Amino acid sequence: MAFASICWSSSLMPIFFAILVYFNVNSAFEFKHHNNEELVQVLMDVHAKCSNITRVYTLDEKSVRGVPLYVIEFSLRPGHHELMKPEFKYIANMHGNEVLGREMLLKLVDYLCEQWNARDPDIVALIEATRIHIMPSMNPDGWQLATDMGGNDFLIGRLNNNSVDLNRNFPDLDRIAFSNEENHIYHNNHLLAQVERLTEPIQPETRAVIRFIMQIPFVLSANLHGGDLVANYPYDESRSGRPNGEYSSSPDDNTFRYLAQSYSTYHADMADPSRKGCAEDSNDFGKRGGITNGAQWYSLQGGMQDFSYLSCNDFDITLEIGCDKYPPVEDLPNEWIRNKDALINFIWQSHIGIKGMVYNALTKEGIPNAVIHVRNITDHNAYDIEHDITSVHNGDYFRLLTPGRYKVTAYREGFLPNSKIITVYNKSGFPAQRVDFRLKPITVDYNNMDENFMSDVDNKEFNYYKSGWYGKHPLPKP
Ligand SMILES: *[C@@H]1O[C@H](CO)[C@@H](O)[C@H](O)[C@H]1NC(C)=O
Ligand SMILES: *[C@@H]1O[C@H](CO)[C@@H](O)[C@H](O)[C@H]1NC(C)=O
Ligand SMILES: *[C@@H]1O[C@H](CO)[C@@H](O)[C@H](O)[C@H]1NC(C)=O
Ligand SMILES: [Zn+2]
Image (tube, rainbow, N blue to C red):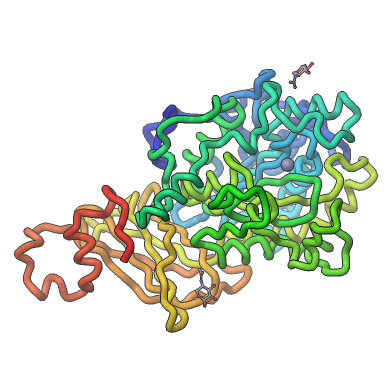
């Protein structure tokens, strides 16, 4: 595999090029179908107006036809992960002929900058608390083809210039997760290392985005599509292989349903039960809260959404934001009004649950790659959420959760595990509550430990330790 198996590994080659070219025209935002040059111009104009809080960069590979893949970042320290600040991303136009998301993200970029400069308290608070990455087009070649061909074909321009559907081109980690489940192996995260061979060559656009996902410790993301009106959440792939109608839940099903609703219910009518479905009458998503499990709608392999969740700590959903894949320019201002609150509210969701530091109790240093495991103890049917996340760069971690009561445990090889019982409330508009862990390094022979030393560790965790699990092996099902 050409990818490091660990997220945000600092040993990766730097993946971004600094953008040296500056465009100097400083114009007001206009609703239109921005071509690939105008797209860059919008990002540069915004950077000129909000230079302190933005950075424009490109991913390390270009599209098949050589168009750079641009991203703009908003944060107080552009270019840096800040301790305890969640990282968020939007990607649009992965299917080149689905262009509404591309224009909505360009408008969003302009809006964030304008409201920052106007000191809008909500937007200032959001940018101060979050590092936001926005990539308006993952498939500029498909966009060009769709546009050259008149822009209103259901399929022309969907694929990249090698005729590959980028949302089928990611390594299929669902199969690994499902096989682990069948074998009662509790291992459902950071699965890229387990990929033995790829069924299809990976396209440059996909490769660039995989490295992007691996490099930045994203907590929450969405991928904007068009052709329907619904927020779609993992898994996209069915367990049995059935093409549709099979609900394929992930261990974070409650959280994902909540996340999908946090878009659909803030959209003008995605969640309106009285609206008509886009195409077939069967897709009456409005009657179902404007959300769907991916595989229940239709099963797909190699999608970006499930890849993000199973390769990294990144909770990703797929947003179908309009029936019309390539709406006329006249519709764009109204589409912005329909999507604006949802786009902003969804970014705020990177602050649900808990976050904190995992420290070495002795040296007080942060511990990266510690495993954060959660058990839901809200009611008597307590159960483990079988998807662990890991601490990142300097020992900070982010664990999205819905309200409830949880037992959270931090593990790291060479340390005694540490557990805390917590209650999550999720107050809207506030950063996640902080829960830190201080892990004691193991300095004595654990087989001869005395009772006092073990007093704050319960037996189950100690047994995990003795079985030599963490960091090395999948955790056996309790
Ligand atoms: C950018 O930051 C500098 C230093 O904090 C400050 O002096 C300047 O006013 C800021 N500019 C804008 C446009 O916010
Ligand atoms: C690739 O791009 C060229 C130039 O735009 C275009 O003529 C051709 O149809 C494209 N091929 C595919 C498969 O998209
Ligand atoms: C934990 O369980 C409670 C009660 O069943 C539920 O409301 C909550 O969503 C669950 N949390 C997660 C993260 O699944
Ligand atoms: Zn699509």
